[in-house]
Length: 155
Image 1 (cartoon, rainbow, N blue to C red):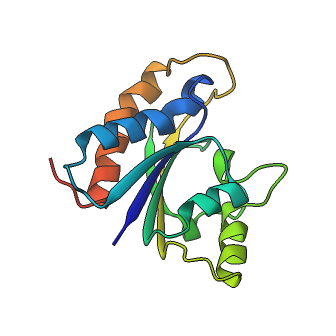
Image 2: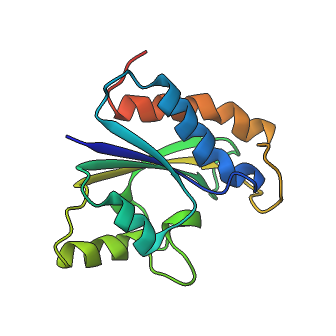
């Protein structure tokens, strides 16, 4: 079974780049030959769905806005999330990832049967910086471990 891990966000917008940082950590800890691809993207909706074609499973890592404490790590199934997901699973010029997956399936695309989302709670995501806030930076190894656990990789 082939799995895709995607770090979502923009690495020059402060905490919005946390998905990339976690994906980098996951990539560094994957054992050689693991049937996992790791990618880094700044898109959502239909464009994100197109990157998922051909995979059996996917894990999306992204910054989240929630009522949880800043730096909290949430692990959710995509189908359990609202269909207006924050940040990169939707776009104002596009549709939600859930809708894009439905369209892709109807068109016959081979899409993952299981999509998990690892979210890191942030507050500010739109200031130019390649640095994460201390709370979000502290969450990177926790989110990486959660992702590796989803992949069945133990340290």
